[in-house]
Image (cartoon, rainbow, N blue to C red; front, side, top):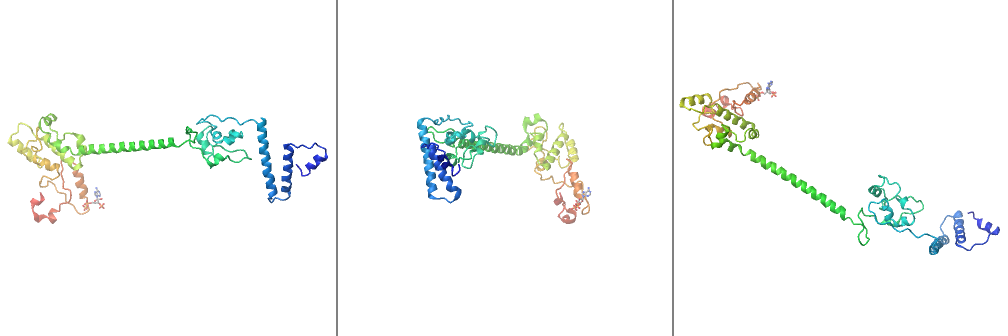
Length: 346
Ligand SMILES: Nc1ncnc2c1ncn2[C@@H]1O[C@H](COP(=O)(O)OS(=O)(=O)O)[C@@H](OP(=O)(O)O)[C@H]1O
């Protein structure tokens, strides 16, 4: 309304209204007129604004008493996963009929309460406040709502008991899994140790049990043989072959001696290597072979070569054969230790 609007109305002879509308119009004119000229705040304008808001409140109260203004709608019952959760949180918004506006268009999926929570303001409110002339409700700015737990019996805010128990349950599950895993690893290690310590016992194979198995050296068979180191495995195979090739019966002295000549290093023991043999009855070279001590025989072949002539490679190739037994390092007998004699060389 223009500054001269009131005078024009009076000149036109309009009846002077003493109601609230007239008062409001006059107040508005009084406030807007100096604002157009001078924008500096003055105590008079502040007083006018305060009295205007007081008038508005009084008018609102009168209207309520007269029943012209509808009473605020009742609050809906609590629904934990309802879309109107923002409105429940913000009773001010509900009073103003803005509950739908507050929940309009969250950033996440439609109806997703979690996404609605995420799209709220830093104060913790659920929705997006779309009314330009209204400020955020006080409850949204001061008290962010707890998660989707229902309120307590006294109507208090929901507590964080449920997430706490869930995290404890998760930790318990994690601990249980780690405990089971460590137990399984421990069991596997124990079984492995047991498997490694058994072949010496299997060598004896004494009595009827060994007889039932025939002439096997290892009680556990190839499974046990596989876990042994390569050198010992080869020794065991040698012993096994020696036992197979050895004539069992009848054993006359001549045949035995001939066979021992044929297989030096493996034979040469009066102890029985037959079906009922035990560790004590095994040929003397067997345990020594298993313990990698050697049988103190002179070599049957010697590799001679110049430095960098590939002698090491030749030795390794020959060592692969189960019937060949070679020394680990170069003995250097002929050039360094010849004076020590053949006893040392054996
Ligand atoms: N089959 C074959 N063909 C060609 N070259 C071979 C072969 N076998 C071994 N080599 C090479 O021989 C070198 C090692 O020889 P030696 O084992 O006699 O060396 S040593 O003197 O015993 O240390 C060593 O050479 P370098 O690697 O230069 O030291 C081996 O690579």
